[in-house]
Length: 192
Length: 341
Image (cartoon, rainbow over all chains, first blue to last red; front, side):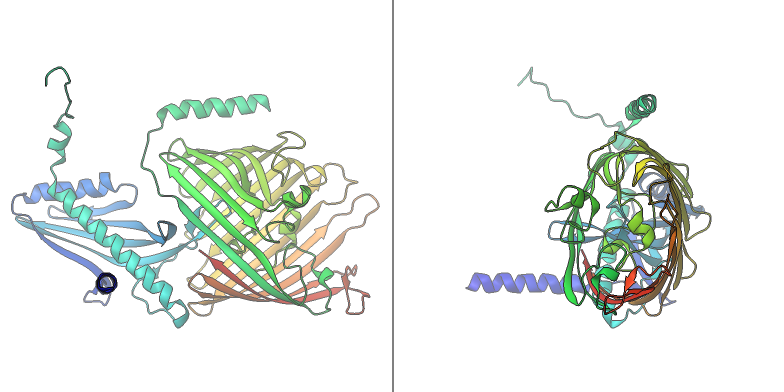
């Protein structure tokens, strides 16, 4: 019984911590995902180069670079939000966003904002496709009927953007030139 | 026909060599469940001249629809089955088979040879027309005359080339309409040109010629929708079908307009106005229907309530009054609940 109580409390606290994740708002009242990262070992130019590579190579299917300067990259992108049913699920919509990256020596920052949601609907062939081309700002307050579904969308969007942020930070911390030069390890069975 | 098939397969083999493996997507599971109540103003279920929503003064079933999709690298499949009156006895392949326990909505494999070029083979929802069998894909719960008299599904093989996000072209070879296996061979050729001239506006120009309803015939179809503002969307479907043997009834022409306006976040009102004419064939004279359907979609999460009032008119009096006498007008109210997951 004690174990059961402990498990229930643990699950409850996990749920509470999951619910606490939400977007902050910027000066204009728009949702923003904002990160400042210390990066003492990597130069500003390298950070900028890697950020451009992230947009134009790693995420080229979902991001388009809008402009860049000697210390910043601006891009637009979309990411698909999933609806999960137990272990399986399907896409439920997409969120478009503006992406801004700025680098200085020793640190960089990036943020995602201008987030618009476009719901998906299953088409006649069983594929999920956008229902409209006009997105709804994620900041909107939904009516009572759609409040639950909108909360799920916000949670999914936050989780997806947080994952995107983690991938971006990992990408900027990794030297891909050395990584590709490194030969794949071979195992010899002749000597042992 | 053989030469065309050989050319398609040769093209497929060449581009296959260029294909590279990409990531595997998780198995997608989706579907819907729907149920409805309908009340015919003349208390006569025979006044419904289009597909589905057949029962009068009854809480009745639509169907449960379950779809699976998976993509591995460049290859994917879709399998979609439905169970229930809308997907069984009221869908044509099932009726032709004498009433099986399910109806296949989609069962096909697809291969993306490149980002632009893909090929699909199997049994698919038809590329003709605005409305579909699944209630999730339609705004109105009842269906149009154009839907009822056009193809529901096509089995075949098709190639799609996407020139850009604004233009794509599909061409394919198909069996006769609505059959799991061909009764007259792979006997129809079809194509679809998709254009998206401005943001929010998509138009499909479709053609299908070969074995179909009433023998061999050709259908030309325009299906388009334009999301003009965040709240207002306009759809249009126009089609013409000519059976080769002009003495066989079934040729038709018609058009339907679908204006929709979102009055609240969760509430959209829509109208369907349709004109539909069966052409004269031999001794059978032409006859024309006009129909107006006012529908609301009230959404709460995955659930959509669809109250609907429908009025039909035909001066040849195919409808019935409460006493059973022939009438030029028919009218119905229905309330449907559709849950999509």
